[in-house]
Image 1 (cartoon, rainbow, N blue to C red):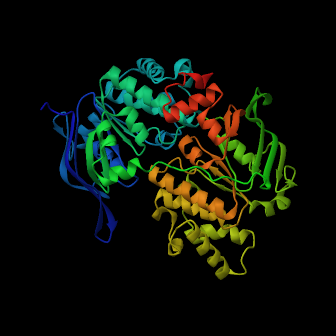
Image 2: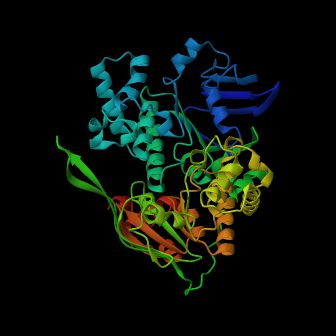
Image 3: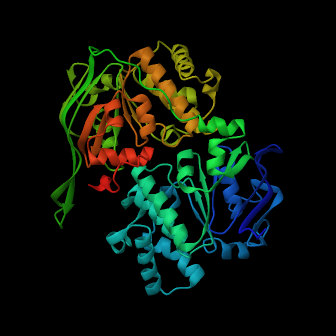
Amino acid sequence: MTQALLEVSDLSVSFDLGGGRRSTAVDRVSFRLDRGETLALVGESGSGKSVTALSVLQLLPYPVAAHAPGGSIRFAGEELLGAPEQRLRAVRGNRIAMIFQEPMTSLNPLHTIERQIGEALVIHKHLSPGDARARIVDLLRLVGMGAQAEKRLDAYPHQLSGGQRQRVMIAMALANEPDLLIADEPTTAVDVTIQAQLLELLRDLQARLGMAMLFITHDLGVVRKIAGRVAVMNQGRIVETGPVGEVFARPAHDYTRHLLAAEPKGRPPARPADAPVVLEAQDMRVWFPIKAGVLRRTVSHIKAVDGVDIVLRAGQTLGVVGESGSGKTTLGFAVLRLESSRGRIVFDGREIQDLRGKALRPLRREMQIVFQDPFGSLSPRLSVGEIVAEGLRIHGIGADAAARDGLVIEALREVRLDPETRHRYPHEFSGGQRQRIAIARALVLKPKFVVLDEPTSALDMSVQAQIVDLLRDLQTRHGLAYMFISHDLKVVRALADEVLVLKDGRVVERGPSAAIFEAPREPYTRALMAAAFDLATVERGAVRS
């Protein structure tokens, strides 16, 4: 057998828990990766995927918090585990590069795109500023920035879209044409069309540069598109490995079968046609002014939402889909009166567009929102009980602290969390558990209408399925009206009665969920479906039409 480019043997990694205790994150993991090959490392959150990847580049906090008590990591025959820092610096970003999961937190907000990509070129290739600039433009074009490449050199990360930021991360990783690219969940938080573009880009670049790729993901659909072999991780161990087609067609391990069966299933139950209207919005518009000149005069507008109508009944779910920047979240904020807008909004039979301050506050308890990132939306300084009870206290619900605590216990039980966990803090929970806490915080006020803004986008498939089942159950019990905003069309199909497709702030298609998913009329909708479900009949490039 020829020498592998990367060979990991019996790798174990543990973390200090304090008091002399340790937790094993990676337990005797072994795999090999040949030149030009793609190996997908899959498993749920906490399975050890990212720790394994970070170990390859020795990026864990050794020896303060992390320990590698045994094993070997050989790259092109050279041992990296325990290698001196100077040698590791010569390898990192040069022969082995990494794309991290969240580009907004991985990119430095204080540095321009040119400076961040150029850093690796200057350190490893010692290029002059002029040569580095030319190479950066070439890299940005290589990753699909096209005519915008040169214009984006002076941009900062917050001035780019999610897809553009991820392309910049890929350009940084490819700057020195590495032999091995480690991609850690590079498509998790982007919409389906951007995901398809990024996967195609990575395949193309791999073929052109001949590099090997270790691709980490919890999305088995992505694995089918990108990898030749797959290794399945559970509780720090690799439980199954082999060619993707063989493992997916005939999984040998129970955990692999569990992952393959974990996709959100089912359809929303039938709703009575005469259910009362909870929310009606007409001609909704949210325009952001573009100012220019010394006097900062308005010269144009960004039309984030432009002429959208909504009718939502009790017990109904409206799925709002579209690419990043299509206006989905802005529309949700506008109908909740969290964003200034124009148009008519009628909630529970009452006009609310012109309400202000104290007049609007009583309605807040009946209109709630669950945000995309529960870790960011839950205060790290409050216990779970305090987080869920905060709305009760503000709205004066519950005679005293004991009564409010009883309502918190009831809400936590409804979302299937142990009420005893109310004394713990958000960082002590998994992503799925944190999202259940966020749902409990919204539901404890007994709302009639809930905006769900990408509530499952960063969760494992199995956890997504659990959250979808939970939302359906709560809706049936309480007659809730949902506006479900998502780029994950599989989740929308499982939950929504009606679908609204947005592009550039305008509705391009709407109708019953079954009709939209089975026979989309518009090219843009068909392109979204193609990216999500691999429909070969949909023409390429329709998303841009």
